[in-house]
Picture 1 (cartoon, rainbow, N blue to C red):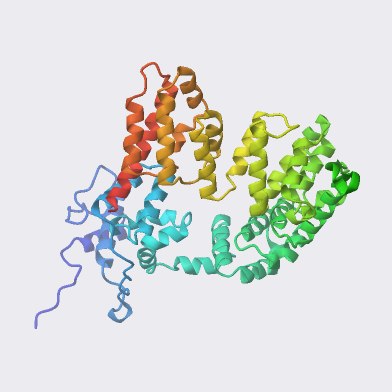
Picture 2 (picture 1 turned 180 degrees about the vertical axis):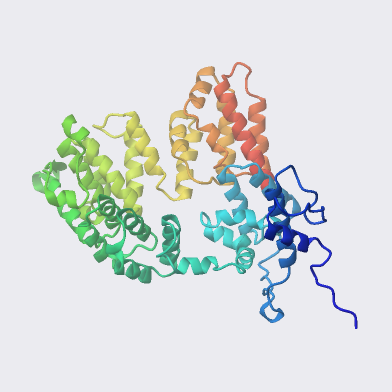
Length: 516
């Protein structure tokens, strides 16, 4: 029976091993072999290391594990059809060109909404985005990413379970995922080891309670108001006003009732003669330690400017729950605040309280009254630019259809200033109908006087519109037509913005066609 040859004989391994034992300088010259090629340069030691590495990889490949220890991976679960080739090519371009995140996210959301998967060859490139857009990436590549992660030590779900280890950023992400899955258990786990955390980590973890915030979190957040770190106290102070039943909200309600009161005076015969008159009585608050604990304090700049008590008033009104004003209708409070000697701090505070509370009656009355004031239709109130800006911000709090109805009225009235104010605050996305009306309005203005065109271009609003308009082929064609028909004497500022608008709409419309 013939002797079995050594698997390493004749491939150059034995002379290479001998050279390693003897030393690169004392060993005989090594002939070139198929694995390492000819020795390079005069560095005998470096050439020897190259040969050893090549042979080591060659002989370890496919060995080192017994057959029974090798288990095939389970088959990847199908999660829907792969996106069309044109959409896949678009994703490759977006990833290769380091496109803006907003465009990349839009592609992922389009794929998710269509029930389509990302192409397999681009799935690894989407892995870094999973932390930023977990739900969207999970819908278009979640199964594939889990399958790719399976040979490693842990899956993303395993990582989310343990939020007490790894880097601060990873811990924050893992705790946020834990909080989304089980808010009560996440808060309980946080309370158990809270005192042992560093200040910046305590602040980050308290801020993460924003997701799933509820009345059950109130005792822990109230205790955080006495934390030794200002960042932790600030995180709790930001969350507690959103809980109308919290002790902080109750304290703020008591303070605002002490600072503001509506005084009613009736004429003769119960108001039949002379009517009923209302007035706002303002009592400016004083500094106190309990105010500081609840996050109400004045900066040194404001202190030097002489507006200390007015600023305290604004913060108290802003932090109060809306039920603190329940004794009178919202419209009366807003009108009296606008006519008050202290209108600026009170109205600013009310706006912040309404934006946080989002009570529909307060939102509608705030938008209506500020609209009347900004257009000069509210007696006793002077029209100012900040007032117009606040009106546009208040309108943004309305539901989408109500916002578009008000904006359409401004378009029909051909009033450029309120239209620009509304577009400056904007909405995430406009309907196809409003998009068409707005593009018609822009076509009219761009063919108007040079002064109108200059006013249109001044706030740099047009260049951002492409992200909000409904990206249909018709809208892209209309934007391109506006640009093509722009008078030659138009300033470059306007031309550049219209170019950006047309190109953005064209790209977004093309992305939608590619998913068809």
